[in-house]
Amino acid sequence: MSMLALGALFGVVTLLFMFSGAPIAFALGSVATLFMAFFMPASALDTVTQNVYEEMASITLLSIPLFILKGAAIGKSRAGQDLYAAMHVWMGRIPGGLGIANVFACALFAAMAGSSPATCSAIGSAGIPEMRKRGYSPGFAAGIIAAGGTLGILLPPSITMILYAVAAEQSLGRLFLAGIFPGVLLVVLFAVYAALRYRQEHALAEAEFKRSGAASALLAHETFTTRQKFEMLPRVVPFVLLLIGVMVALYGGFATPSETAGLGALLALLLIATIYGVWRPKDVAPILTSTLKESTMLMFIIGMSLLFSYVMSYLHISQAAAEWIVGMQLSKWVLLTAVLVMVILLGFFLPPVSIILMTAPIILPPLKAAGFDLIWFGILMTIVMETGLIHPPVGLNIFVIKNIAPDIELRDIIWGVLPFVVLMLLAVVLICIFPSIATGLPDLVMGTLVKH
Image (tube, rainbow, N blue to C red; front, side, top):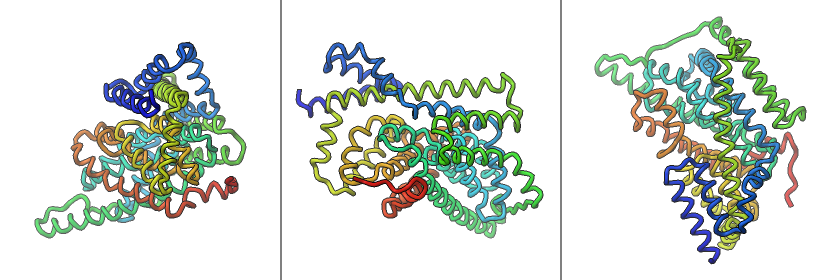
């Protein structure tokens, strides 16, 4: 069988298993095992478990369950609601401050928890009702939370970035640093849009009031005293200090990423025990159960994805595809655009974990040959995969929002998130034009890499 026919067969069989409705891990593992049976030596099947173990025997991957534990500890407490309330009080005087407060609360919570769905759930459960009570349209309120939740895979610590660092064989520390300024850029873009959209909705509410005398809650003004503002800090500051402490431990050279993850998980458990009294076995059990379920699911997907990639590599499918892409002699920017469009299309059906591990062997060699910095590309790929969390048909955050706000029509949620998808793509363009947005901070902190 020719390499083209083998590659086409591999792709078709993969799609058939994906669309069969089987869980992603089982679909990828089944395809890999099937092709090992038919196209690899018979002895290969005897080494499936060994191959999976060797592929997963990475000290970097050890940090994933620990970061999940840290996120679960924070997500299962009232930290999200307290963080949202503090932001609301401190930004109450700014026009559109409630929407901006939700953006900042999502960003901070995402950086602490590292999970997009957890951020949507924790901030949205408090933020969406408050925004709607104050006159924000349902789609606008839902869009802010859904988009803000996507920052969970860009701002460090990010499980998605951990997997990219493993797949691309890049420094996790540099990758985490590279995500900070692009994350801040997205926060600013989201906040500016929230302020402009608020002004638009406020103007419409004023016009309606003048026309019919019907006063919208959007026209009401709310003020908070200085005392109220400072009363909100004691429950929020410890978690912000936790975030700063974890970053200092990692970039100060005091701990490895895995040690940092363990330290963060331990401190998060201590904080929720101290601040919220979550220390009894019945309180801690849901946190540990959630961590175990999510870690098992994610590590199983990672293991099967790595086996899938191993089979592709053994059969030379990934190498042939990479050589074919290089042989097309596309200009570097056309190549980059084609790769990112492919990632967007895959985001319709697959989570970021699978996209990274399935495509890395194919897309990274041509991009490296074209002269692109793989750390810089990792940030672009992460942002593009973020859009997959909020664009239909299977945007995970859309369904999280629908779950916590069932009275909002799915149509309104989708229209509410689309402007944020556009803002994310704008951020990608800005980072292409000004690559130092992503590469400046890691070069400053860890030194400029010499490219050969």
